[in-house]
Length: 244
Ligand SMILES: NC(=O)c1ccc[n+]([C@@H]2O[C@H](COP(=O)([O-])OP(=O)(O)OC[C@H]3O[C@@H](n4cnc5c(N)ncnc54)[C@H](OP(=O)(O)O)[C@@H]3O)[C@@H](O)[C@H]2O)c1
Image (cartoon, rainbow, N blue to C red; front, top):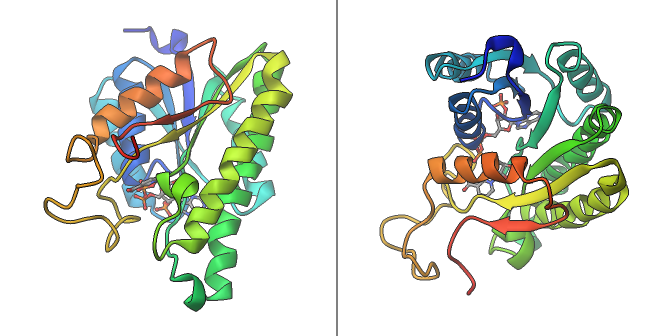
């Protein structure tokens, strides 16, 4: 366990949600100080912070709408005024809410793209400068299987997540010389607010070689591991057993 002032620091976006909380806890259990970002759900962010402290970690809450560039810049600036400065950022915040392509409502399309793609762009653009100034660091972006293969009824979501592939690879090219690693991780199906109504029920896991999705804790451990690898950038890591 690190002393409080020697802990490395991470900022996790969307840490009031299911996957973000699991990632926050994995870092906390490994002795990291965790910046817990949220948008609207203050109570859930506070619960993540409570669990981080129970796990022996330290943490702080940050509210920001990632669709707003200024709000993201301010969040990252405030987190970088703390000691220690974050060495890792996890871009996990996102929304679902897609429809069949022919029925896709334009306002929902714009909302999904503004959050998942443009919001992540805002995060990357704010997070890279402090990492570059500190001689390097790591950013893990949470993508989706839908971004590679599409999914019935998820046109906007799949398009937004496909956009993250090019964004992550470009960021890796541009910031590699500054020792900033940027990677994409696919968490597989997880039962959360976002996946409600879309996640397969029961034993419908025929397209998974292991006939099941990965556990949330295993996904979080994989994020923790990937974030600390010094020689990996611009790569895509799938946590489940689909599409062999
Ligand atoms: N669940 C799955 O099966 C699955 C599969 C593949 C990929 N993913 C990806 O995993 C990530 C996390 O999803 P999850 O399943 O954990 O969903 P979740 O429980 O619904 O959490 C979503 C998080 O994103 C935040 N968020 C939403 N809109 C935001 C905005 N405009 N500004 C800032 N934060 C915003 C939410 O904040 P508040 O609640 O505080 O408003 C919440 O913390 C997403 O990127 C998702 O696409 C999920």
